[in-house]
Image (cartoon, rainbow, N blue to C red; front, side, top):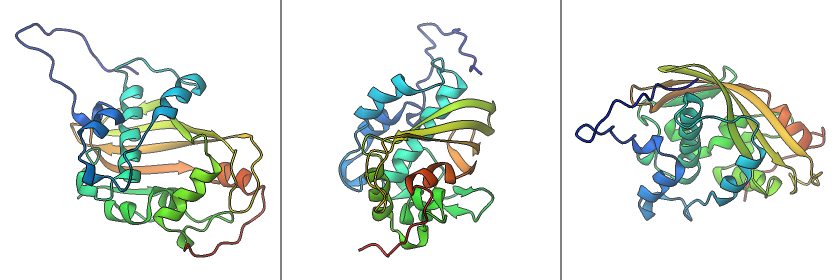
Amino acid sequence: MTVDVTDTRDDQNPEPEAPLWLQGREAVIAAATPDQWRGNVPDYELSHEVIPRERVAQHAPGSLEAIVEDLVKVFEMEVSHKADPATWLSVVAEQYRGRVNGGVWQDAEEFARIGSYNILIGDNPYYESANETFESSHKIFHTAFPGGFFWEVLEVLSGPPTVSFRWRHWGKYDGEYKGHQPTGEQIEMYGVTIARVTEDLRIVELEHFYDNNQLLGPLAHGCPVQHGKAD
């Protein structure tokens, strides 16, 4: 699906520049102030190198798929690296809510407090989100996927204001997962997301549908793990 980009502009009526949250992660990072970050400024050099080589779907610049993919990547970056939802450009923070598989809705403050890993993965025989903090959850999955855990849009099924799309996550299991040794295999998971957006394409609501066993089962080798509270 491609957005109509027929060029009817002239020198006197240039096309308006896209909003910052639609210009990609690097533009949003460049515009942020140092005090907005939880720690170091995020670096996506590895993503720029790996995703073009390993992705399975190619999207034309300006296509709805490309726009949706960039917007969701900005959202993920802001949730992971900006502590204050008021600084998230990709969402309407005071209205935002998200949930997984028809579960409990969580608002922006909750996403910021416990992190997207705990909310989006949730409880499972192989992972108990109630026993993890924002920091511990990020450490667990960054350790399991030291080479990155990448994401792409496969297909957009409906356009704004309610955008539904299929996606793929993937990465190599090269690090330890809660005492389970890595296998080096590539783990893939697939899902569908329904996003409600504003007229200027800021996110108001996200509903994700997927089987988290596609991720956690291989990480734990099919064996439930014991959890303790983070230090």
